[in-house]
Amino acid sequence: PRYQNEFSTHKDFSSYVDVLPMVSDRWYVTCNDGKIRSTRVDKEAFVPEKLFVDRHFCQVLGLYLAEGYIDGTVLGFGFHKKEQVLVDIVSSYFERFSFHPTITVNGNGVSVRINSFVFAEVFEKLCGKGASNKHFIHTGDFTAEEIKTIIRYYFEGDGHLNKNGKSYMIG
Image (tube, helix red, strand yellow):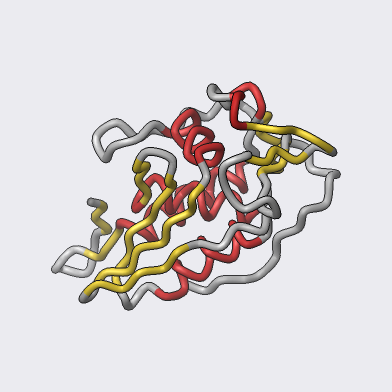
C-alpha cells in the first residue's frame, strides 16, 4: 500500500463524529476548548470533541475493522512485522492528538496500543468489538470516497490474493 500523508485537522469538514455523547464514564473526563482529556493519563493527550472524518481517520477505521481490538481502556491493533506502513498510519493518527502509542514487536507480530478509554469507546460504538461482532453501518455521514477508503484499508489489513491470484480473500 502507498500511504499518503494527506490529512488535516482543519475544521471545515462536512462530516464529523460527535465524541462526547459516546463517552460513558464522564467521571474521568474533562472537556475544555473542544478537547476531551482523561484525568487518568497523559495531560497532553486529548480526543477532539468533534472527530473530523478525514482520509487518515477512514484509514484507521478500516484498519480497526480488520486488525483492531479493545482491551479494557486500550485501543489496540495487531499487524505482521512486514506491515510497517500500516503501523505508521495508526501510530501517526493518534500522535496527532499527543498520544504516544506503545509499539511492541513479538516474533512476526507488531502490536500498536493506545491507552485511551475515550478512543476505545468511540471505536467500539462506531464498529463494535471482537472479530465476529465488528461492523460498519453507513449512516449517511460518510461520503462515497470516505467509505472507499474504509473498505480499502479493511482489505489492506485483512485481505490477500487467493492462491490462483484471481480473487481477493478477507479473514
